[in-house]
Image 1 (cartoon, rainbow over the protein chains, first blue to last red):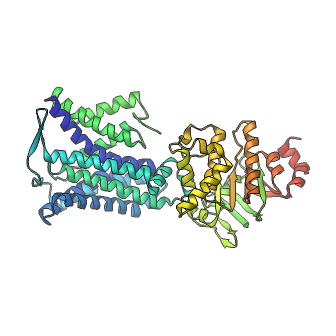
Image 2 (cartoon, rainbow over the protein chains, first blue to last red):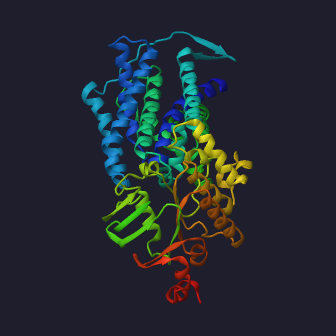
Length: 282
Length: 234
């Protein structure tokens, strides 16, 4: 029973980590707490659903579709909205919040508020130490882990990845050494949107595709960024998994009614005792 | 090499520079001196493209560079060492240096420039895998100069390289500028340390309240009564 909850917690936590990873990179480089990622998550969730049901794509191809749709929307939002308001953080923040509602509500407008049930793409489960874990849940875990490693290698090892880190540490000096901040922003937003989109596609078959599906992941990944600390990839991973664990264990051992409340109790505790986040740099 | 003609610039509508003109010839060290707030940093930032000038023109090697985006200015051969030892603190020394060569396409060229910088600052080689944020002030100053040199720029601008360093290290920094000059790098040096910078420069400009008030041979400037009174405390 405990083990079952731990597994569930890690799996749900890994999707928080994915969204939070994108948010954190965007936030630390552009100073935009990009709430629109919550809306992008919804649109990408529907994109994966339609890719499977209408276009009859295999599930893994649908994940790629969601990844691309998420990345493209975020790229366009940065290119045509945030970039215009660079230097006016409050306007960017308002745009981000407005876009979150706009995209989520667009989903209601186009596809109604009724939940759409994702057909199972992989049946069966395995038994690990007496707990049953469906293959679909395992896929979430492995894809999330794979993406984390890829993003980490990209940021640490590639030239553009290093430029992204440099820009997050000192934007002006990055420009002086010849880094085009516009390019960095485009890459970062595409990556952030792609991560949100992937998380949505991975989680959709486990729950349902619904216009409000982005609300909790958005709020929780914002909490994960604050928990883990700005600019820390490891912090996001540990913060996300930790949050998933606390939620699923708390739901069983304290009360499932408070499941989503635990997130914010943890947030308040961390802010009281570690104002920089657990692994924060700034 | 560099010709700045009557530039005006400022921040958010507040004008700081008024018709500043200066030039730097190939092979020179030119000092731009003045008190805090005189507009020295603003001048460098405008040349580097970090600030849009309100008027005037800037040419480098007879190319107009005013209004050019900062990330493109470096490709013209102009490198800037910004004020305040701004390393990328969470990157290693080596990564900091690699970022300095961001515009250098060929890998062999990057390696060659890296060897050159290591030969100038051997300490950077010893500590190349250390995080730059853990360096002392003097080491960070060496690193930011080394980073700016990684594009092998013919022209280097330095903003207050001696500010906030302990006196023994200040000497080392000025020594390394002399070495760079011998290596053929043309230098525009902005300093509050008027005496030391005029001592290594051939020519100097004195900036006051955003205007050039004096210029000429640096020995003559050092002997100038006004300069003595205002900046050398004699």
